[in-house]
Length: 517
Image 1 (cartoon, rainbow, N blue to C red):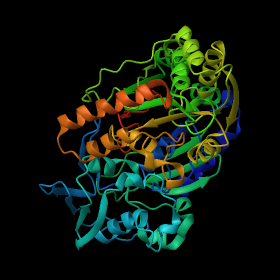
Image 2 (cartoon, rainbow, N blue to C red; image 1 turned 135 degrees about the vertical axis):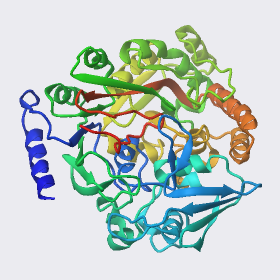
Image 3 (cartoon, helix red, strand yellow; image 1 turned 180 degrees about the vertical axis):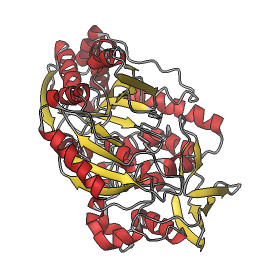
């Protein structure tokens, strides 16, 4: 421990000097340049991939994504059985696993985790809110059968359950730590993962150290330091000067520079990412579908992809990203057609509509948001929209947008990385997912037909039927245009040449157990 804190002192000293003066990072300690400060280290209370990249190294779920895929494999549950009707899941848990605080992982701990998120009468439900508990809305009861067996009874068959359990909202936290710290648990996290929490210095670093007793084998690294560096140029400068070992979300301008330098390695991975702008369908000009469609025709998304993002993304057609290539959808992106946009505005009887556009300085998966926002503003203004931009720090932006755009903005940037085609439309476009009901439908879009199809798709156990239904979802949302559809990102990261075993995952998570330096 003394050695680790000497290392932390060295890291702190590095952070205080100019990038050009930075020395090599400490041996066997990985320094990761993050894009923002985490909101919390409680996986049940956060929504951002920025936070999840830390949390998957501290916690485990019952299941996890198999490396390089979105297929589910065992983790804290060594096996499971599913009933013929798809409504009962019985998990056999690993024995002998302990949380970092020394308490036992068992079936009671699993029940505590899900009851905490789903049962308003649970004594620690007040430690929320739990914004992505929607992922487990189908769960009726969680029952302890014995110390190593837990059973989930669903209200109805729910095809994405295992995938949702592998997502960070399904990570298992220590009940003892929640009981001890209450709402402050997010500052005192305890899981069963390969790394243990050490400290969180606000705006400076989150530090985790090797869990020597990890059930799946101890990691090679002594520690990982996650540093929040919001400004992309500063992250690049520190990476170039040797102050970071890993940098996530490399600005497009710098990808080629790093790729051509033998001191660095660039990783890229296609994944289920959607970058879009939420449109306020409740009030203002975007209550009219023609105006929403006009906005989609007005923006030159191919130019954004080619020139701003420099080929690191593709143009988006709807809420189902192309990474889910089993979904049957003929939908093509809106073409760039400013004359069509002007004609639609004329048909809607709208002249020079005024808009407030909320953007962020940077945040998970947001793809150069200030530059993108300015380019979108220019294209919209070219067809007659009057657009005022308001810029916010990432966590402030999330707090503002996730609670709904009413009275705040007419449109807002957003990005999601998802694990199933159900996730994004169910949490952000369903009528019952409005912000006052705990959902993320910040633009207040409602379509009963879409609700019906989503309900059917998530309860189907027939993959071919699901493929057809999500194709219909893509078609409906594309036509109704509750969003300005922009891009699907090919995620990237850069590492120092000394870093070995680093791989990006289609889940957009950052699993560091297998990394060495």
